[in-house]
Length: 173
Image (cartoon, rainbow, N blue to C red; front, side, top):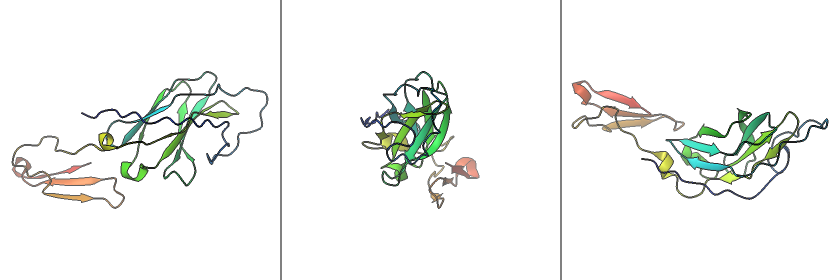
């Protein structure tokens, strides 16, 4: 069973869509609509295999949320998801080994302005989200894992079980 690992919440609070190094374009000129309240308290938790779960408290006055990602902690933020108003969590599937240094900003936006939640990053080990593989109907003598192949992008794993039910099987993950 995977244990939930709560990630460090950094206290850096940025204002507006184009502030800091978020890499997003500035919002259009304001016509007097106030921005959503400054959000606080987002968590990032590795949950299922290859999944980061973001959770936060809903803020009033938002029309959408935006999730920004800086995959290596140095290249700048780009938007990876747009979420509907009143959302309070989002599961983001990633190739975990490549995202060890990733940083994330969640933005609460109305039609004109965005406010950033504090930046979150990965902290500690990722073993809880890496998981393990096994055959869906494995039995003694199947020789699960006798052969295996990983795709060039690391996103797909094929595992052979040459004696599964006498005719063999290949499992894809």
